[in-house]
Structure formats: C-alpha cells, structure tokens
Image 1 (cartoon, one colour):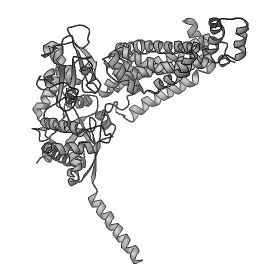
Image 2 (cartoon, chains in turn blue, yellow; image 1 turned 90 degrees about the vertical axis):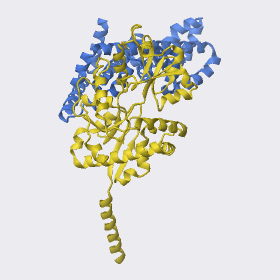
Image 3 (tube, each protein chain N blue to C red; image 1 turned 180 degrees about the horizontal axis):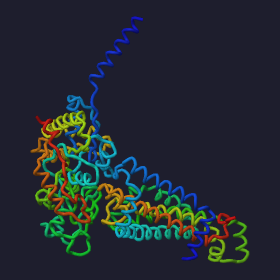
Length: 265
Length: 332
C-alpha cells in the first residue's frame, strides 16, 4: 500500500501534479464566489462549501449508498461481466466456429440500450443490487470480449511459429506468449469497463430500487430539491470512478511493464 | 410613390394594431406528461379561453426527471402545477412558492394491494414490501407510516420494506411488492387493464385514511406577485383555466380528444385519456379554483405530524404559502 502511494506521488511529480491542482482549485473558487456573489438559488447550483458541509454531515448515508451501488452492484457486475467476456474469448479461441458467430451476437448485446434492458433485468432479478449487477455485467461483457479476442490475435506469426518449434503445448503458448501479448488489450477492456460499471450501476437504480444507493439518492434528492446532497453523491461517484480506474492502471503497469506504451523517459 | 405611401401607412396601422393586441405570454410548467390530469389547461388553450383573456399560454409537459419547482426557480416558467407537499418543501428550501389556486379539491393518490397477499387493513402492512414513488411524491407515504407507527427501514417485521417504484405498475404485476402507489385516474386503470378486476384489489385512498394532502394546485413565486401586471396576468390565467376545467368536466370525451391532440409523444390513447378524464373530474368537482384554507391546514398538520430523517418535507409551520388574492379576483 505504501509502495503504491509512493509510486503514485513520484509518477505524479513527473507528470506535473501542480497544474491540475491549481486549475481545479481555481474552478472551485470561481464556483463558490459565483454562486454566492450572484445569489444563485441553491436549488439551481449550491455553493461548494454547502456541498462540503453536506458530505461531512451525511457521511453515513453516503457510505451506505456507496457500498450498495459500488461495492455490491458495480463491482460484482464488473467481475461477472469482465470474467464472462474473458472466458468466452478464450473458449472461442479453441472453437473457431464460435469465433465466427460470437462477435455478431456480442455486438447485438452491446447495441441494446440500458434503458431497455434495466427494467427487464429488474423483473428477473428483483429490485435489489442483484439486478444492478446484472445490468453492469451485460454492459461490461462486450468490450471485454472484443478486446480479449483482439488481444489473442496480437502475437505475431513468427513468435507463434517459434513456440511451435519448441513443441510448446496450447496451454504453454497461451501462458508464455499469447496472453502476455494480449495484456495491453485486456487491460484496455478492463479500463473501459470501470467507467461503464459505475454508470450502469447508478442508472440502473432509476428503474426501481431499494431506498438506498447512489442512483436512488440522486434521483430522489433532485425531487426534494436537496441539490447539495445530489452534488455530494456526484463527488463520491467521481472519486470512486477515478480510484477504480487508477487501480486498474496501476495493475496494468505492473503486468505490462515490458510494453512500449509503459515507457517513461 | 403612391404605392409606397400606402404600404407604409398599412404597415404603420398593422404595427399600431399589433401593439394594441399584443398578448401577454404565460408559461405553465406541468408536474407530469401531457395527460387528462391537466385537461383544464389544454381545453382552455384549444377552446380559446386563454385568448379571450388576451393570454398566450405555453404549456410545458413535465416528466420523470423534471421538478417543476426547480424549473420555476430557474426562470423557466411563470406558474407551475405541483402537489402541496412538494410545494411547501420547496418553500422551506428557499424557493418561495405561493399557492394561487387549487383546481383539485380532492386527491387521487392511493395504495393498491393484491387481495391474495392477505392485506386487508393498514394493520396488515407490517413486514410487507410497499412500492412508493419518490421525486417529491413520497411525503404522503412517510406521513402515513409515521401515523401507523411503522418503521420504513425494512430491518425487521415490525416495519415495512420500501421499494422505489418506477412510474409504472410492474412491481405489483411481477409480485415484487404487496402494494404499490397508484393514482385513481391513471395507474389504477393500468392495473385493471393488466387483467385484474376490482375484486382482486384492495385500495387505500390517502384522503380516506386521514392523511390526505392537496394535489395539483397552481403555484407562483412570491415576489413575482408584487408586480401588478403579473398579478393581473395570473387573475386572467386562473379565470380561463377554471373555465377550461369546467368545460372538461362537462365534456369528458372532447377534453380527452383535446389532450390526445396535444400529446406530441403519441403515447396516450383516447380510451385511457377518457377514463382518466372521468376520474379527474371527480377530483376537480367541488372546487371553483379557490383554495380552501381548511384543506391547507390539514395538509400542513399531516406533514408536521411526521417530521423525520426520511421525510424532511417541512420542519416548521409555513408562513404565507397561499393567497386568495388571485382567485378572489378571478372568480368574481
């Protein structure tokens, strides 16, 4: 954990962490001064300080919503969807017939709008987090599948021939050559899915939900004109999304240190 | 040259005429989508009642993600229709809404349960799952549960599990909830259309349970009433609107057709709107448009009886949340 923080800080220093911080602070200051100075009604846009106060006051509710939506809904759906996409890609690599039909079917799944499938999945899996996980799994499945299939084709013919001359089995050439070569693609899929998972889990809660969760809270508090709470949830969602993406990026860095895209001069 | 003079004169006359006949613009933001719940306004528009009052009224339909209180706070409307609980809640949060007219005398909100689940009286709610609409429609429910002394966290069998119901009746049809929220004039009809008969269902009308809250009323921002020109516009608007409501109640089929004609989404059917109109007419019956202070008092008392963490509608007695100034002049 310590090493992770250190690496984050050191990489941040290299990337120049100061400009974004200054810009961010300036935007927040402008927001605060603007809303207070022009007397913007808080039901339109609450000042930053009000949002901060609300986050402190309602931290218990925010945590409950976060665990309902992110830890239960988004994460489990992410693992199921990405896992299924990955395994099916491996399987279709063995069965060429599958490969020919799979992408078309996957494409069809990907084209289904969330607004269409969410109510159906709520009907099948009930209104608690299970149906939200199902929505996330459906959303994550296709990007993962496509990226893995693409990645498994990444190893060059020369390298494959070399593995064959070593008399490597299918499994050996998979683990020693093809999966490492596919890693950048696989992580690409995983990164795309982090954003999809969070969006999917939040939006799925608009279609019937228990009375907790980030999506529930956002839609309800807008109706109650408690915009400070809505913004507090948005802040939590943004932090959670960034952290999730960051963790996958760090994993990628550890797994594909050899790849040209990871070179830092 | 002659022609030029003539056309200039004609132009000047048209311009002068235009100045004399310029209609006052009013934007009305509805609480929900175009349907017979708002028939009075559409009838007043189509039948020319607004025009007779020299008004040019724009009716903006609402929807599941539109809070009228927010629209009026942002300057997107002159007048809105909303439920009193939501209006008072907005007032406490710094949007000083004032009720200027109350076309709905009674409310259509109810809890509809399947008889087969064994729910017969409110005493049977404990341990059940109940569907509730949020987005400002949840205040009556929480007031009722507070009155019954039922917890709403779903933690044990002494309380109820609340399900956030989407704006449909699916949870009841799919057996996910024992009871769901319905409006007499809309979702209740959808349950019947789904194949249930009235004998399969048990209805608890909020009004009959003694926790009635005023539904669709007309609200404006308090400070806008200080402008005599705006107040005069509202007098004419309320007068024409009530004329529209009266006409709609007397001619339900024509009113339903007018609503369908005005529905740009094409989602509404004439059969359902005719049903809705006949049910809405029961709610507008007995109101000439003026708010009955006793009804207001009951709404406030109900809200204040159930102040809790989950139900932060209002915490203190509102001041000046309604006025007869407009309706008194409109209904002379």
